[in-house]
Length: 102
Image (cartoon, rainbow, N blue to C red):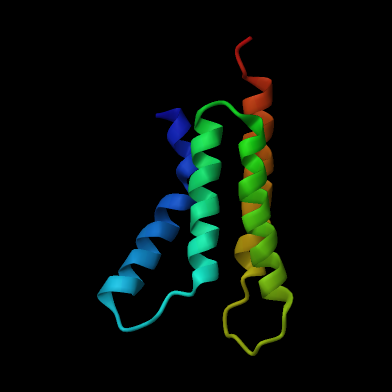
């Protein structure tokens, strides 16, 4: 159960994107799907005790920060999600390194 925590960002993002892809007429961009795939890969590698799996989550958080700092006139700024995600994946990577069994 404790390893399920690595998938906390991936599960809501995936459900959110599937809802908007199937349930509504709104379109989900390919960048959003790429970020979601990076979240899932990060969760899988961290679940397998590979500390470098956190890099995928950090990259996706950095993409969100970069997209949020671009002035495109959007109502919602993505960097609000990006900063906590980067911190979350850094902490997950640190946890995996410290609790890895030899």
